[in-house]
Each structure stands twice: as C-alpha cells, then as structure tokens.
Image (cartoon, rainbow, N blue to C red):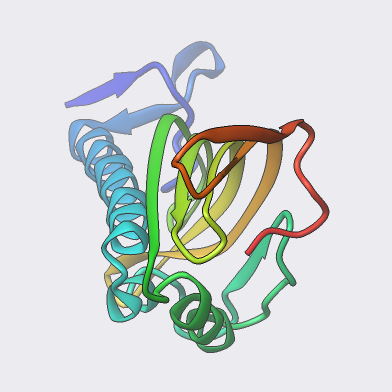
Length: 185
C-alpha cells in the first residue's frame, strides 16, 4: 500500500499530481528514527546531569564530532570535549540540570537529520558559591552510522543568563542578569 503526504527521501518516487509517495514501512521507519533521535538527545542531557563521561561520549559521533557551545572553546572531536567535560563538569561541588524541550527534528536524508532544542540550564557551584540559570538554544546534526543515530554536530547559543552569588550567610545576590558573560565554567 502506498500513501502520499510528505516527501520521500528514500527513493524519490513521485505519484500522481507531483506528490511524493512513501510506503507505510517508510513512514514507520521515519517515526522510529525521530524517536531514536529524541531519545539520543535525552540520553546526552541526562548523562551530563549524571556526571557520566562515558555515557556522554557514547552519544557523540566517534570520529569527527563537532561540539561548539557558546562560552566554551570549540571541539573537533568527542575525546577532547569529554576530557574537558570530565574535568570541569564532573568536579566535586558542581550540580547541573539540563532541561531540553521544544525539539524540532527535520530529516535531510535517510541517514541525516537536524534538530533544534530549547534548554533551561541550571548550575550550582559550591566552590564559587554561585547559582546560574541560562536559556540556551541548540542546533544539532544527527547521522546514522552502523545502524544507530549519533550527535555529529552540536552548537549552542546562550539567550539569557541569571547568576546569583551566595554569601556566607546563604543570601543570594544577583551578579549577572541578561546577557551571559563571555565564558562559562
């Protein structure tokens, strides 16, 4: 059975009146791929919160991953990124929460997709006695290799920032409100 309604990136078949035609199996595969990508992004964010460098590594493309987060140096491979993440993000007294939402996945081929995500990031740093909240937007590229989806490229833009410094008595004072500082971490 053939169904019309959206472009067929699998075989380019075109039905009557110029509509792309896809099979039910192709539509089901697209839904499964979309779910796999959403689960991949969730695993990545949860691994960051859990301070699990191996799980973070396992989400990023093994060779050639690009990680370019606003406020951090850019990385051209996952190993360099994971090493810095383990050093800074997994230090004692650092607590993070990454709440990703509003994911929009677009397929640009059978084995390639892009994703846009909103992120509410919350950080507690006991050493510097700061509380940080940031609004962030992610732009990702996903690729399927060896039968599974990977984050091949991930970039972020910080849209807003609120940083409190906490004094010895436990009272927070706003030190940054609005634009984020040049660097973070």
